[in-house]
Length: 130
Image (cartoon, rainbow, N blue to C red):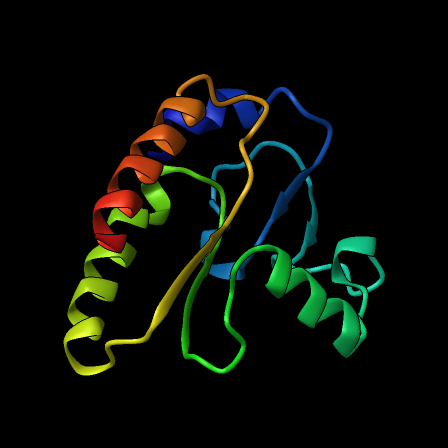
C-alpha cells in the first residue's frame, strides 16, 4: 500500500500521521505531526441538545423514545456496512420485537455512488419494516 502512497506523500512539505505505527521509514518529507483522529467538541453538530428538542425531533421522525434503538451514524457508504446493521437488526428483533433502527448519515460530496447506495438502503429498510 505504501508503494502507492509514497509518491503522493513525497510531493508535500510535511506529513501528518494518525498513529506512530503508521510512520514509514522512507518518508522523504518531515513529519509535521502525529495527530490521532478526533471530534471537535465545539462544532455545532456536537452541541448539546435540550431534552425538549430531542423529544420533538424524535417525534417528528417517528421514533418512539420508550422503545429500544439500534443506531448507526455514518456516511451512506458500503465500507460502513449498513447492510450488516440491517441484518443485525433482523436478528435482534427475534429477541427484542419492538427494537427500532435509526440510520443517520450524509452523502459525501465526492461520492458519485452515494445516492445509489442510499436508495438501496431505503429499499432494504422497507423490507425490514415489513
